[in-house]
Length: 262
Image 1 (cartoon, rainbow, N blue to C red):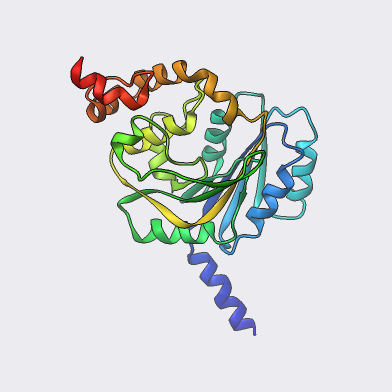
Image 2 (tube, rainbow, N blue to C red):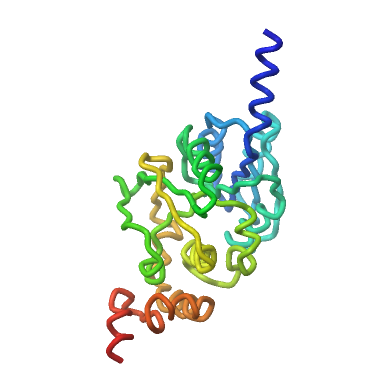
């Protein structure tokens, strides 16, 4: 029996380490459920890096109770700097070969990490792996995403934040997640990743349950559309012009048409 246990432990050691990145800001009502979903993973070689981004509620105390129960969890605090700064801070402190961001109110399936790792291990040309997404909370149902292409990525985001990528690719971007005041940092980050090439794959199962709340930044972000587009044009001009033949317009769907005829 001892030999069997040693074999299992050695197998786990051969698995690449995955760093699950969880930024937290006032998530006392949700963080326990999120951590439970990660801890239930069928993949065993992972760490959870939590950054409390200046919470004023009971989030930290809940997280500390989990740290006491699991040596997989590492917990750090910072003054409130925003979700991008928290993600970058966590990734800098991570030891994993692969990175999986998970928002502190979302849930992942038990097989998501394992299946995403298998793709990245066996396909060096694939840079980002995602999954199907099911919304829950104040809006429900499977989120439908279009097929991935660089041209479409230049106009809109089609990759949920909780997608797995190599830490080495994050290191090659211009500072990781943009820490300026930008209201679609996920989209900006994926452009940063793919403007140097690479492929994308979406796993054919629901690996993420994506919570929709009325107060969510995901909903409030729509009022910031023009500033977001200005930032994308400024930060990724070469990629945008290459894919769209000119700048990204506020009417994003018509950008290629406007650039062609204007």
